[in-house]
Image 1 (cartoon, rainbow, N blue to C red):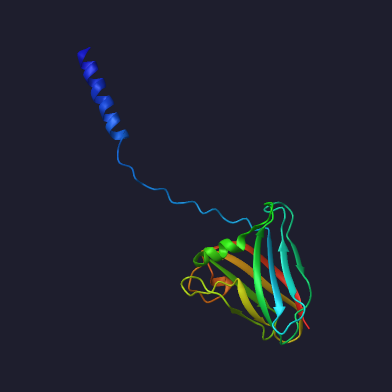
Image 2 (image 1 turned 120 degrees about the horizontal axis):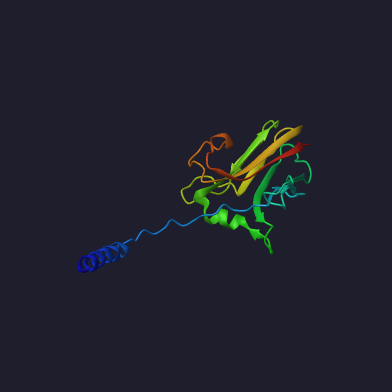
Length: 186
């Protein structure tokens, strides 16, 4: 009986010692993916005039319905536009402006733009992250020659390779939101 008591005391002591070990491992913070239901790119002619809005709105989030894609008008040939993109989570009330988080975490995000069908159109980034790499929330778009059936793809990437060549194909990272818009240049 005395042997069993000694065995239990030793066994419990070992359990107590190992349970009180120094475990200062701090867990890594979880950075949940942003929920983005609406992306709006507003292009305003630099000399004044009517803005053109490109919008993708998916109010059921990851639900079964496809996003509603709208473009408010045509771009004017050989015109320079000042652009800004806004990302919203409209599943929240009031809507949460995800753009603020993108700007705050600028070293972990980049907005990419890709054209098809346009001749002479170009995008210039007007903002950078803390390391001097393009961010893409504020841009200048130079509309090229008059044409129809053009597309503009806008992609927000989380943790893209930086620096990069500015193309969507070589961006890596995870896509937070992506939309392709059809438009004309008059």
